[in-house]
Amino acid sequence: MANNPKKSRGLGRGLSALMSDVTPDETGTDAPRRPDLMVPVEHVVPNPDQPRRTFAEEALQELASSIAEKGIIQPLIVRKSPSNSDNYEIVAGERRWRAAQIAKLHEIPVLLREYTDTEVLEVAIIENIQRADLNAVDEATGYRQLMDRFGHTQEQLATALGKSRSHIANFLRLLNLPNEVLDYLVQGQISAGHARALVGHDRAVEIAREIIHRNLSVRETEKLAKQGGAAKPKTKSAPKLKKDADTIQIEKELSATLRMKVSIDHKDGDEGGKMTIGYKSLDELDDLLRALSGG
Image (cartoon, rainbow, N blue to C red):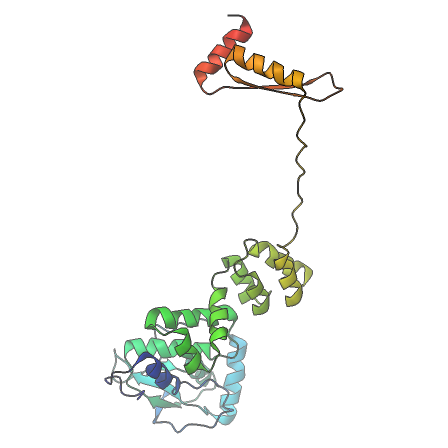
């Protein structure tokens, strides 16, 4: 069970047990849960290892208004503070705690759990993944953390989080994109659909810039990516000159005399041309200079 950390649990079962404590909806639209305790707000402290570091001020104000009118519908999940037995450390629900202070609540409802440090971090990540306003990069990072830090597989995440395995896999693939493209995704300048079309593309950054500049749809982006992105101007190489027999014979004679490779480029009908002499060492260059100077 989720409130018994001493019991050994398999990864999949443990993840599901932790999920049962995390309420995705912080606005109170789900059926309310009965709290274990009502705790003075000043005795509740945030988790110092909370992975979420930013809280939108406008959204907090909206939640505070709702809490002032209806109260906190869904209790926070807490554990006894490891550093102060009089306090409770937030496991999930820091946003509600912050909004409660804005609403000037004196007590808040909590569910008391006996989580280990590892489980606290795991639940915090799970709670962040459940946020409705989570961007695709943060969601993908949450999946990656659950896999790398706690050993969960894509199948286990899909089952516990109610997602398809392909959903998990597609979001994880986004983390392979260049940082600049990920920044555009976080800022909302491109969508997750745009980003998926760029995964593995060697010109992902250039195409992302073009998406923003031209306001391309996902379908247009997919087509552009398949075409290789915005076409680069190709420089046409000059056609190779076909040398006549006389020119070839002169090259051979000069090469034999100088003991160096000689190449002559001479267009038919022109008086001028270009002769190239290749040398393999500085000694050969000295020999060539002496030959040309008559030394």
